Image (tube, rainbow, N blue to C red; front, side, top):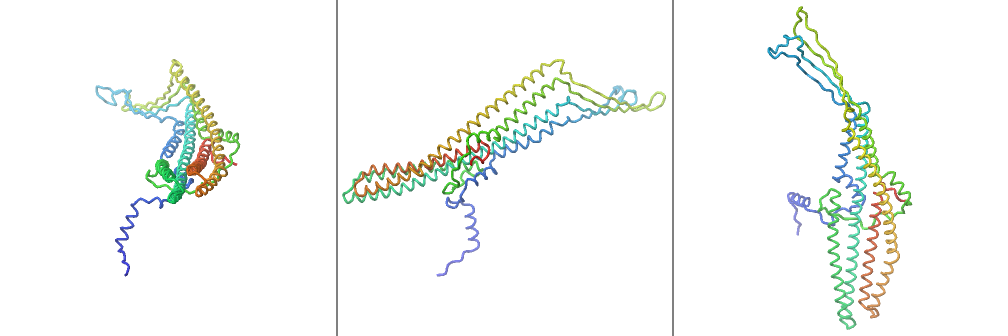
Length: 430
């Protein structure tokens, strides 16, 4: 029988359906940790918002350091109200003037300097937010990685327990086993199914969180690589990490710049005790003739004015006190941030080293021993030398150890992510 040839319309319609239907889990691309981080840095809206704020603040210093706009004045002076004639009175003038405000010397420079420090603090805030975003992405990514490995352990244990059920049923049928062994194995299978349901739910929640960080649909399918991408590194000495963090952490740079801005504003407040000035020039045009028949001469005027803040300094005193309190607050904020960073580094090192040591203990010691024990007890059960309940207990212990191993791997990498964020750069290992 000849195969039917599909029409072009059929093919187009099929391609259209494929384009709008969601991809199944197996069709999703593997999302590596680096790819997740790059996607977040490029698309995360919170980071984009902070970048926009920083860019906006970068335009302020030039504005603050510029003189105020000059003022143009147009005025009709000494116009007689009985006739509204511009020639009736000799003092009637059409005036045009220009005035320029001049802040006390040094004020504009301090205003620009303060704004520049705030701009630099905002740039440091962007760098800090970038570090925190990378930390959060890595934390969620590793949560999903752990849940995938935990599900694999559950599936492997389900398969092994099914074999236990078959063995127990076979022994029961030939009169060498107990029905309670079969029921116990089936109960353990049901427990694993309950665990699997819980793990799948947790994975869905973590995937939604990761997609939000990457600015993707919460329904986006996520598949991760099977094995960790890099081995656990050997960290630099903690004292080196502490020194590095105090030098380069963007949080501390931001707090330092904000303190510098506060100090500049105190200097500016001292300048408020000095007067500001204003200078101007006016040209007055006169229409008509003098009594002797000659044309009336035009007038020119110059003006100078100044504020008198020293007559009552109450307002200036209060303003200076306010700025001093703001400087003190910024100083304490910087000190508190330094202490916080030191704690974060110390905690990150402790957590990483503890989890790395646990992972190695499970990998090279406990898990191989537990597997040997399970194999030995399974062989003993088949020849009626081992109680089935003890076999189940040992198998359950192996499941717990394998799960704890992947939890230790995950926790170590998450501690590493926190430590990178605490120090301020990726280069924290030997």
